[in-house]
Image (cartoon, rainbow, N blue to C red; front, side, top):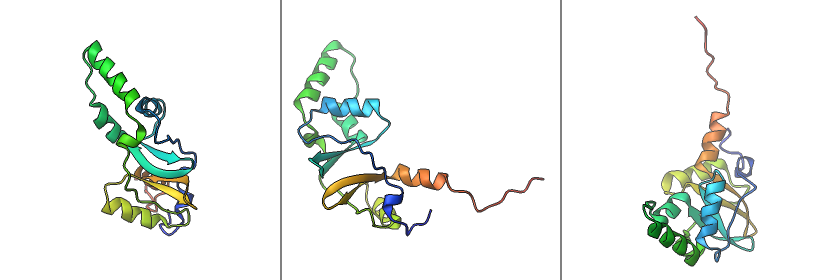
Length: 147
């Protein structure tokens, strides 16, 4: 991977999003039916926040032993909206920004996903997993010699 390539080379383009007023039951459904860990929150196409899977799991608190616990969870998921738990202070990049800039953001912050925007519209997302996947797909410059 060339760290000076534009981020658009490795970003995910087909991004699943939610609206700020969508109930958290929709967020739960998206996390359960897709292998993703971040959901951008957008008004029309403009990003206004991000929900990570860990933020969502922290909100629901995970243990449901009784029918009453399950009832409470379902009620909370209908009552609360995406905007209630989304992270608002986001690092954003443009498609032409270099991959090494994303690495610096990941290194200096606790972000694991960066929305990619062009003219204030969400066009993609890059995650730490995208970087790892790209590195894992590279051919090793080391040649192994059989004994």
